[in-house]
Image (cartoon, rainbow, N blue to C red; front, side, top):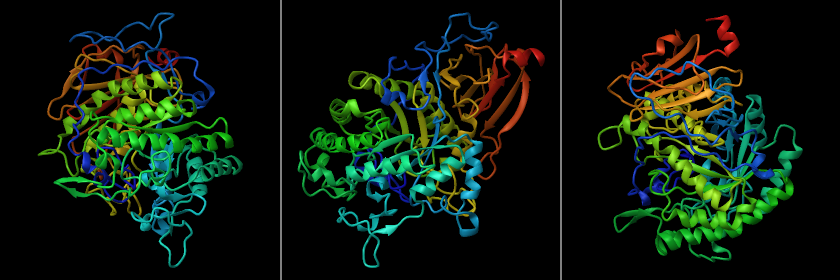
Length: 584
């Protein structure tokens, strides 16, 4: 999100803060915590081929999680009865995702050349990263895959500049071309999610990209998206001046203070008002993005094609004014061509550290309690316009600004809860923003950033990486994942997973930063025998010294509940029933 990308309630960009683009919407409300964590209903059965081609992700049941148990309730002692269904969603290999970009030199070269790809690759594999999103957020709308060049230096006033790199021109060559990116994704077992250039590109270029991916070994793409956050005025949007809107004078990301408000004075949402301006952006996109979708489908009829989803004011760092104008128009006009919507989830709008005038760690973590209701809102809209479409969270992070949570335990716990909450609700993939964002360029995580890794050579993991590592214990390909209720839903996020090998895993995140919590729970599949455990807590943790403590305990010891340290995550895993009998 932060690297040349934007988020609705904020402006921001590559190697720069996304918040600059979104400052116009700084007044958007922060996400309010919800007390209940419920599993969202699955989309209707009978998905059409376009939606079904999203690899392997399907709903296991429409049942909600088991009801909350009172204090002292024991864990279920018997397996579910025949005919009972696990209340979760079957995950695909795309579940755990991460953004990267053409400008990312760290991921384009190894440490001998000042990069870090040789360090990052084994870390991606260890965390089971199954999807890499390519384009770089807003960068995708001024990047040409054929020339591997961008026109960032030409902006904001020459958005139609040539992508041909010359000594006197403003276009420049990028570090990580598509073919190299594809090879590196395949090397770690990941698939690709590509955002085509809608803002300054053409349908023919998009179709040629799809054809190239199909005819070049190793370049296959799992998901295609037309443009990035085109509901916002931080994006290049040359089509806005074309029919049907013929809106003249727009320049991207030219934010300034107007009557004390930081906004883009050339933006339709400023010149026409929020509702009319968002409608202008939506109508222009719905009409002009359609030829891109058709070109992609012509090149590959089975290609899943996605469009940006616009959140409302409940998501403070990604709020789009009068967002329903965007969603209703785009889905209403182009729904038959759409396989998924791409929701960029940034619950907060702040930069720097937590506390003081900024949200606390506890508020950051409790924001995740609203994810099931947010997913339900998206699902309801899709059911009305495009029931076969799915939900992908193509960008996510704590805030639309760089924060220091990437250096603290809150970053790890948020990342883990973020992934598990959206996947348990029904999302296909949750893709962290982003791999390297140049906020921390030294050997340690010391300042505000977005990245999963520092941008030094060699890079080192920042705390969100540990969150994904923990989430991967439950979010395995072909696992069934669901939310799980506990005796303390106000403080604890909980999840259960039926693992593909037949084992069971449960996870708990204690959002309280001051108090340990002892909770009882009842998973659909009871834990049995000797359990493996993983614990990550705030004590003595930072990006330079992160420790996931492994251990074991007997399932019988959970009769009185499980005790969770303050600001921590605990994962318990039992062996498949057959192995549990052999190792009681």
